[in-house]
Length: 179
Ligand SMILES: Nc1nc2c(ncn2[C@@H]2O[C@H](COP(=O)(O)OP(=O)(O)OP(=O)(O)O)[C@@H](O)[C@H]2O)c(=O)[nH]1
Ligand SMILES: [Mg+2]
Image (tube, rainbow, N blue to C red):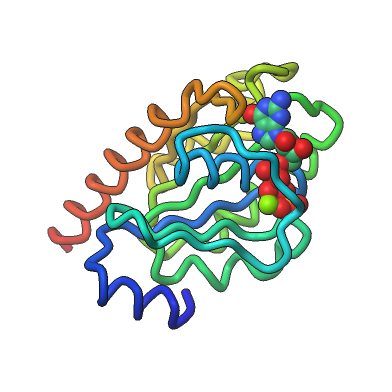
């Protein structure tokens, strides 16, 4: 992650660094804004990234879906990744699978907790569990992941997802200390 992350982390003793990734228009910024404001906020497509470091618990980078080749550069110093899937879109699930496989490869040697967020649950069309089963992402016990269905319109599931991610990050930190 870039120097902004490290500088701000030092100044504000931020505990946890998170990165939000996912396909274009999947709902990343809406989740980022919901975490920041506690309500839905109408978004624009992201250019580059958004960052929030005012909340001392988290430093969050919300990356642009249109430049997936840049995501990996933010993983190095991250504690957690939120991979966002638009659960109202069945047509791009193949692309989602490919990005999830790429994510697995990119973080193979890093101790990072991954939360898969199926967002737009207010419009939900896909069967999340069947999808996860089909693409086998949760079967790799070496690289444990958690998942949650959520909506940035209603707020449903967002805090639950973050709590699951925090627990997973704690586990990773304990494992890291044992190594
Ligand atoms: N109904 C519904 N719409 C949502 C939800 N989350 C996001 N949207 C809408 O989906 C569209 C895309 O949301 P963004 O959060 O901007 O998506 P993004 O993943 O940040 O997109 P990029 O920055 O282009 O990669 C916007 O029109 C949002 O209003 C949700 O939970 N429910
Ligand atoms: Mg965005």
